[in-house]
Image (cartoon, rainbow, N blue to C red; front, side, top):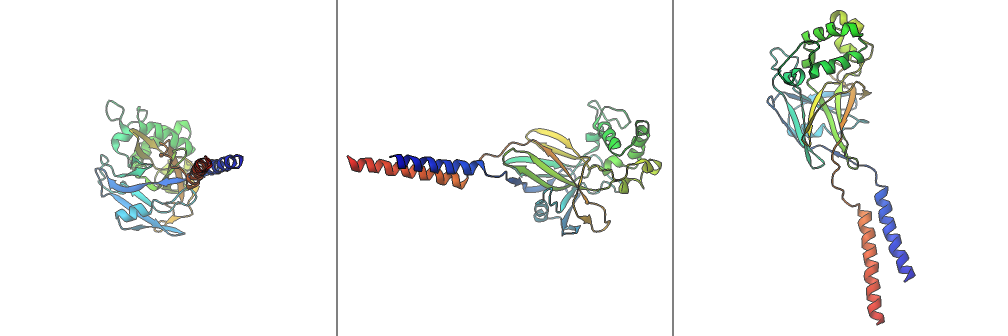
Length: 291
């Protein structure tokens, strides 16, 4: 009897120990589809060990390029790719929708209303109570601009369609920690954004801090909540877009709190419980045989 109890305890302890030491797994976005009011306005970039390059806009390629992580960002999907083009319609969006951890998630480009809505209308002026002003002040601080230059910088940024340029996020991965539920999203961008903006901003460009970093903005809807996500800190992706040699060189990771997926017992736990059940069954047979 004592030996049987020891076997039972050992089997259960092994199973529970295995569960306690299981590392956090990363779930990825599945069933990825492109939509929105400008559903055809996107680009898919695959990658090799050095460069990113465009590939065909197929559902298979969209899913394939989203399999990276912070340590190894790979290709990406650029939403609303025509933001810098002539005649761009800033009222439309392109979205990437899929499932992660059994829940729907939508990542979208931004529209004029997302940036400039005040709750009672659209205002594009500096100082308005809208997301554009909130974000630009953070952008300007990250760029090293002083407070007295921010109003004129805002107007210059607006004139060069800077808000449009910041509205086409390049999604490189969407991963979820299966234990905490945290969802991390990779945004491909420039590791040194001064290289991109200095030639566009005229005199303001010379005031930008060398090597400053800022991602584009992505609109994320998950679990009935919508957030605008962005970052001012990048890690090197060790990749460069093949045509300009600068894009996609930085990986900006943003995150939201997600709902942890329903836990599934590890095989070792199941085996431990089956082992315990087997000992109990043997014990019952032994008692019957002894009567």
